[in-house]
Length: 438
Image (cartoon, rainbow, N blue to C red; front, side, top):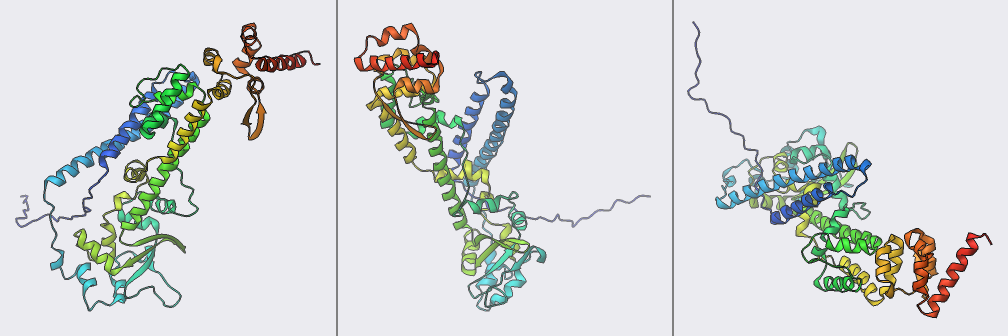
């Protein structure tokens, strides 16, 4: 006969490893940023103006970027739902003060001996060590203590992705090589960055050049298309650099704020097998545990429940947290203002750009604005030169140069000023010398 054993008094063991819920102030900004990025990537994937040989690779790369952003967006939207639920309910307060064995009670006790902290670490001895200073065997004082730890161990305790902690710390280094990558699609959103004054100047320039703009305050890509059309590719690279640097400053500010709020001083320190240094102050630890209702008994448990742990993510810093620290793109606006103002003051200088980009259509359409007798100060391949439009066309070759040699252009130039006709004569004479090898 078989017997069935029953356990009438059985109670499952409940383990609560959940970290305190952290409210995100900038969650809506982060969602908006990701939605905008996904929209831009979808448009680039559907772009038909791509050589056939590169379509497959291009779509593969862009689809990967798009899917990554979609996953991040879903996670953030779920976080928002959890946050809304959190606000609807009163948080449960833990009665840590009644526990005589918890860290708060021990550290707050007048009988606490700082040297006893070695018995409260709780981390495997191979993964950390108490730091030494020049005067004592161990760096433990009445105010706190310092430990050296492996970054892999701290990332494990705080549930942080591998490599993120050191990468984040290095962003604030004096010799930091951190760069925030900005791709061409970000230029579709110039209308978000520029001031209304610059927008009005862009409209004036477009009107002078006979280009029809469609609601540049709201239409994505409208400013970029106009700048592309008039040959401002170099200037737009500068715009990308300014956007990148503004984001770099925002990420750096976010990192400094994160490191300031963590309840210990965190720095990279290579000593043997250890590569991180954690400096704790007892008073700061007590205040932190009270603020976040932490009922922990060891330093290990303390590190496992760090409120800011989920912020130690490069992806989160670059896509969400930085939004709280982003500036007003002052340098970008200065750059854009100077570029547009330059061509408003001297529209003839735009013909240098039209020659470079080979925009013969606009060159013919607005040729009355051109000055063929003027000598321009320009930089080509880092060399400063003084050239006429004819000389510039010789350097870049292309459609405009060929048109300069045509009968159509000859009829036009012969109705211009004597200075321009003379410049044209030198151009043709020089061409004939080259042609007949004289």
